[in-house]
Length: 141
Image 1 (tube, rainbow, N blue to C red):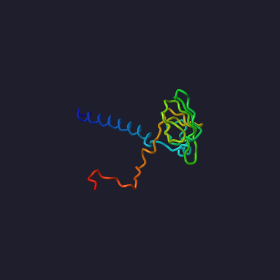
Image 2 (image 1 turned 120 degrees about the vertical axis):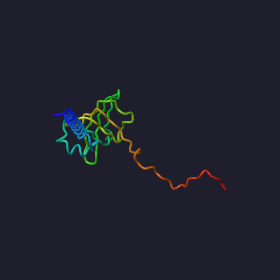
Image 3 (image 1 turned 60 degrees about the horizontal axis):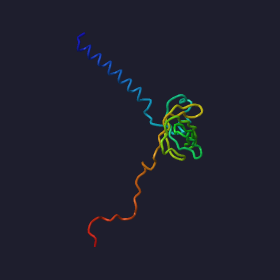
Image 4 (image 1 turned 90 degrees about the vertical axis):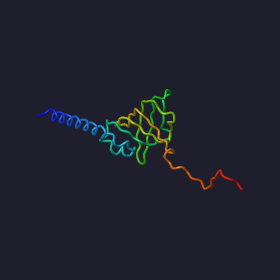
């Protein structure tokens, strides 16, 4: 075998190994997050796995420790609720009745979170248009 063939074979093997590792790493994170209802429905196969769960914090369920490094609350979806215990730095705007994504490990008693991200619904809504005409800065008569 010539050195060119050896080099090409080695390069193909290395590229294949890198491609396989990239694919297997990305395959687990293709879905950005699950809804509360999806997480509860699929909980049997997700227990002990890292997940991201999106839901709304139920009013009256939020309890934050004074140093803002721990919180417990109920996430609710359309039909189900999921208890969340989060041990991390919490966002300043964390409050009841807002949408959040909790990243952590799904347990039998809820999700043990290590990251909380608040979602700003107004950021993704289209701007309201008014029926009031806008004056142009041209001549006035």
